[in-house]
Length: 347
Image (cartoon, rainbow, N blue to C red; front, side, top):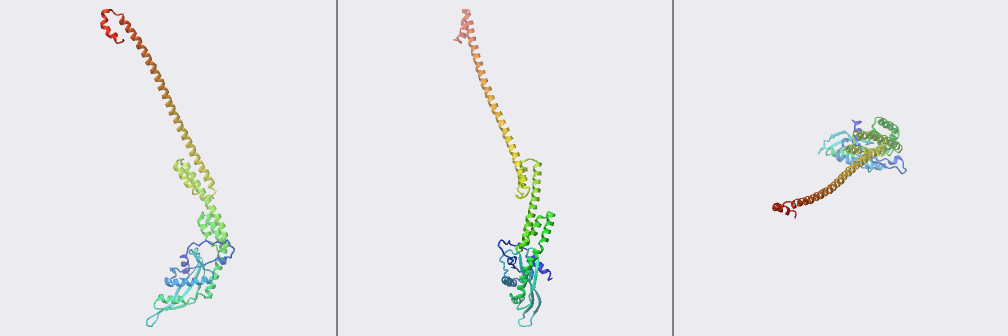
């Protein structure tokens, strides 16, 4: 049970670490900070846990490891096991307990446990279990030399652990990259804390390498998908789809320049289509205008022709009238009465 508790506690504390700046010269030892935390899985009652957490805070402050981070990486926590409990035969009856409190220091992000330290048993008496528990916790000495030494030693172990494991961590990251698990590799390398300057620097260099491989692989896949989409049909919908796909390619990817060429190709294609459309519209317009002008010319020619016909008709009518007059004039006098009315039409 005691071996499982530290793992449970650290698993409950798996949170992301706040980034720390190491631009100014200082040793790794001075940059480590511990955050006191008490979790429910420790089995310590809430109000007793608050008091114990305050004691842990005092100890890390005395060791120069106090952390104000709300997103801790390295934590110090504790649990308490009841070794003995009895109800006294006094009036009123009292609860007497004997507990052993154990400290744990570890990496809340990875779950790595760097060490434990057990205080000497402490006793407490109260009217109930909680009060007896609290009295026992009050007896924990925040100046305990063994506890303070344990805290300082854990700092060294943290640095030694990551500096000694960095080559294995990088090798594991390369193995993950070989399986195209780029995100897992980056997460593994990012887990190397900044407090371990040398190891962290190696991890960051490797992250840059892995990230470049990741965006190159993803960029190539996206580019190929875009090309395949464009080849299925050069439609507006496909053009928009291609642009959406290419927009996902990281600017630092090797495929980015290719993606820009494809965009230029699509733009050129639609520019050519637009030019052809405009040319066709212009031809249609020119044809319609030519038809209009031709119709106008035909109408003008028809009007001239009609005018000439009318003139011809008018001239023919005048000749006919003259001929009729001549005929009437040549008729006998006795028939003049009949044709005089007709001839009067032309007077």
